[in-house]
Image (cartoon, rainbow, N blue to C red; front, side, top):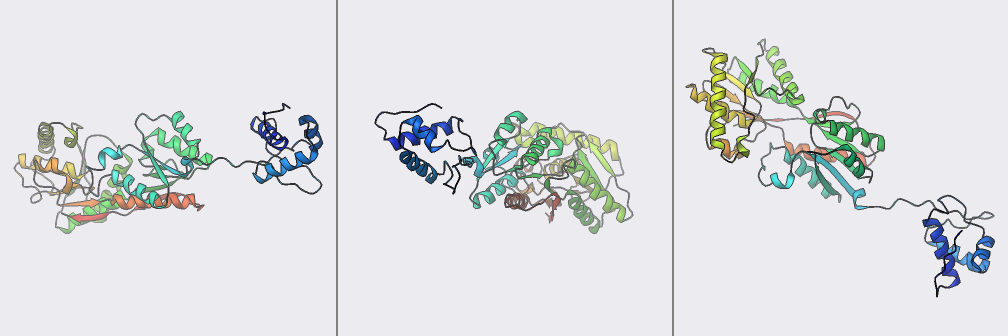
Length: 382
C-alpha cells in the first residue's frame, strides 16, 4: 500500500492521513479489517503506540469501528451523504406553474392541484421541485430518481402518458414513495387519487331531472376519448337508466383551439359557435333536448352562443350544465357570451392537491397504501 507523507505532519497525523487515503481510494473497503498495528507501524516507520492513537482518533470520527476485545478494527460502513434532493418532493406535471398560478386562480383549474400540494409539502419542511412533462425522457428522469428524492408526485393522468407509467414502475422497484393523480387503470399497485367524475355527472343529471327536464343529453366537443370522459359517461348512463330514461351521447366537431390562449380570441369563438350551431341544427332539427351536459364551463359559453344563433334562449329552453367550476373567472368567453352554465361541478382541486400530498407523506412515514381513491365533487348551482 502507498505511504502518504506530508512535510511537517506529526507521526500520528501521518498515520491518520495515510489510512484515510487508503479508505478514500478503495484500497481498504467498508467492512474490511484495518491492517494490523504492527504492519502499519513498520510501513510508516512509527511506533505501535502512535498507530493505536491514530486509530482511536479515526474511530472517534466514525471512519473505522471502535476496538473490540480480542479482534482487529474494521472499516466502518459509511452512511450515504444526504443531499437537498433527499429532502425534496419531485412533482411531474404538464403545467408551467409559475406561468399559470397568477392567471388560473379559480377552484376548478388543475394547476391548483400542484399549488396546494406544494404548500402542504412546504408546511412539512420539505422542498419541492416541479418538472415539466413535455419532452421529458425517461433516461434523464432516471438520473434524477437515482439521487433518491424523498418522494414523487406524478400529477397527471398517467394512463395516457408512457413516461408516467415508466416513472411509477421505476419508483416502485427502487423503493421511492410515489403517488399519482388520475385513474391509471394499468397500475393497480400504485396509490392513485382521482376526481370522481362519475359522481359529478350523476349530480348534474339528477339536478337537471329535478328541474323537470326530461331529456338531458351528454355533449362532447371533439373526438378525443379519455379515461375521465369514460367515467363521466358511466355516471350519466347509470343515472339516466336508474330513472328509466334512454342515455344519449353526442360528439360535436371542434376547432380544438382554446380562446383563452389566442392573441385574438373573437374569431375563434365565433367560428366555434357557428360550427357547433350547424352541428346542433343537423343533429336535432326540431327535436331539441331540454338539457345538455358538456365537458367544461368554457364549452358551456360556446354552446350558449350556438343556441342563440339558433334562436333559443340559453338555460330556458335548453338547460346548459358545465363542469369544473371555472366560469366565474372565465373573462374571455364572457366577453362574447354573457350566459354561463346553469349548474356546474367543482372538482375541488385545492382539496385534491392537499389530499395527494397527505397520501404521499403517509407513504414517506412508512404506511403501506395502494389502490384507487376518489375525491368527491361538489354540485354548484350558478
